[in-house]
Length: 179
Image (cartoon, rainbow, N blue to C red; front, side, top):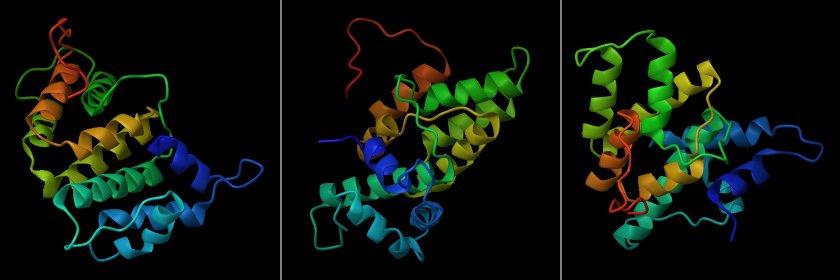
């Protein structure tokens, strides 16, 4: 089975390599509760089924994670295939690019990152949209496959992995990167 990024690329590229701007526009609407239905045909083309209240919670969360990932990809369709960088590492690159020097714990970019890792599931789309837009403005790619998995399993482990990469903490042999 193909990755979510491969599926996104396949539905947003026309023959000849041109971008399907209509598909991207529909996918971008997936972040809003009131307009997400525009993204459903594109999600179906990628092989996802819309989840509703009668579906098991994990199925609803997986669909929501796919929908958010697709919407964020549509905002900045530059996928980083060669990297294990999560959003924490992406934010660190943005931080280092915007802040020449050391900064401190009261720095607004550090505070924004801490706000991101403290937010609950409902707040994630808005927080991530700002980060993806900043990454786009600086030309940094995002690993959408990793983002999708992180959104599916949003919780303390994901937050800790993001914090480790933002603060450039080296992984020890005992750390589980996949959980």
